[in-house]
Image (cartoon, rainbow, N blue to C red; front, side, top):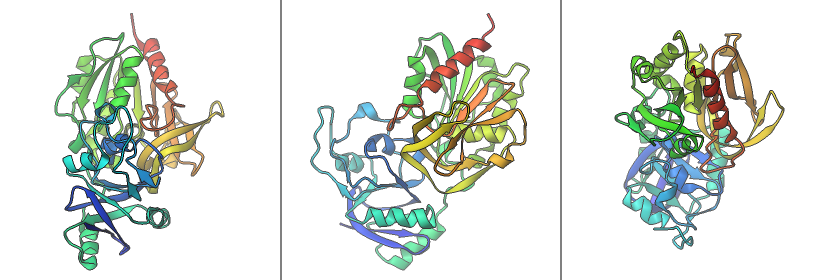
Length: 364
């Protein structure tokens, strides 16, 4: 079945549908990872986006439930050069085509993904639409232009949990994770480092957090514009201004929220960082890590006026902020994904650093 992709600037791409059929709108972005498509599909940070994979063959090892990063696919649409109907892996339970069809996700194959990626790199990520129903180009362009986009929109409320729950029931250090769209591997990595993990919705009140008295607070990854969730920024402000501020670690959107809570500002990147090969430099050691990333917004380095806030990591491709910390309070955050899934494991040590900070903060 024919599928048409229309971008808000009028560019049109055509291909063949797989998975579900219908019509979807979202921000069209690209991911440079060569593997990990099912982790990408189920990452809540992709809510509101139509993801293009730059690697040409996707689906050759099938889909299994063990590698999901949430309970279901979160993308609005999925674009690939070629979807493999034949899969081979001892853990595979079904094909990518079957998985998308079961979950009503529209996929498109058979187009020039290199041309689409190049266009986004030059013009920037933009609103788009994928359709198997309306094939009129002018109509689709108008629909893309009128779609909501990401700026100022609260997508966190669409992916956060409904109530507080325990991820595991063993561990020396009590960690409360604010679920902005948390990936399961963040929870797994915390559990591996002797943490007893509780997960709370992003709407949790600061009074509730303080009453729970965790040893540490983790602000998770999540989708969209951090300025679209001002209630969470206000919560974090109150936590870090408490008489005895608890250790806080931020990841991705959580990093941006912490930056806002510390008085900074954020801005939208031209086409964002999405993939498993982003080089990040630790300014203290000079060490470069290859990191997994998925974000379209960044903290403005010039907006951090508090002299106690320092930049700890930068992206070597564009010099954007990749990490900050507070010199007096036990607060730090990183823009990239130390839990990987998919991607390199260079940054997993940061979970151990969080544990060390909690150790020093616990009063016996």
